[in-house]
Image (tube, rainbow, N blue to C red; front, side, top):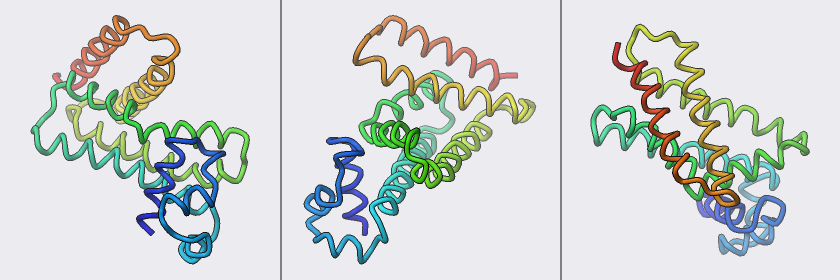
Length: 182
């Protein structure tokens, strides 16, 4: 199963959601189409498993970084958030979210996956800020940073503005710093 999930992630990342066919995924995994369906009822089941794995990887990377470096500075924290959105596997999220806009079944299946990932992000943010900061403000800042960096990640290829990206990073760190040092 892990080979199929990994092959799905790679296929969506490299050829896009719509071209990541069962044949493409099976070939990459070195598994027959029948073998794929012994593990997953449908392509959609496999795609959802791949989306869950991408979310797991993002949060594992963040938690590992946080554990190995102790308490991250606000600047390091926002750098890590931006780095995660620029990672190649995040392309899988972008592909799936765009496809889900017009595919109701995919949207319905991805909704709990997206909710779980954002809940994880918000919980990690709550672990970072001072106890007196409200959950509502923490949620707002954490999700705003993620959405801002998602947009930046998409636009940086067609309209790169490195000076604004760096300034945005420092402004976000100052905002986060104001929440973590009361």
